[in-house]
Image (cartoon, rainbow, N blue to C red; front, side, top):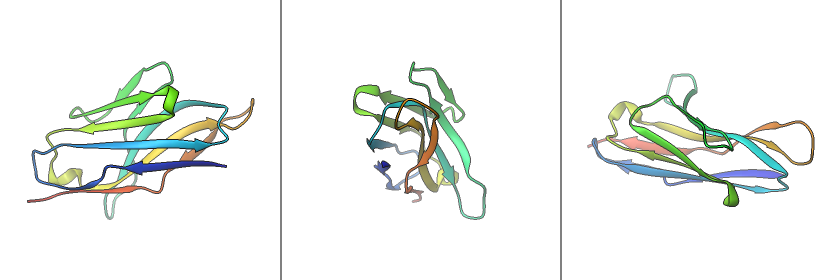
Length: 117
């Protein structure tokens, strides 16, 4: 069984920074793309950033930077210059194979980020 556990969310003032972390654990054979999504109240879940095992990134939000530690099966999201509209539940996502074969899509439980003065 595979688990993704996020940490690092919380309350921050506008203009502040937060660093989210996500750790994948369990019977992992390989991980390809890892990423962060977010969902604000009343809105659909949207991609924030993604990173491949080779380090290629898709940074949809220019103020955010995604990075990864393949040896530790971890992905990070550095968020700077945060705005109230960044308030959302942030979810970790990963494509993981538990044995040689197909990749499955896994999600973390989410971590709340609130940007408010």
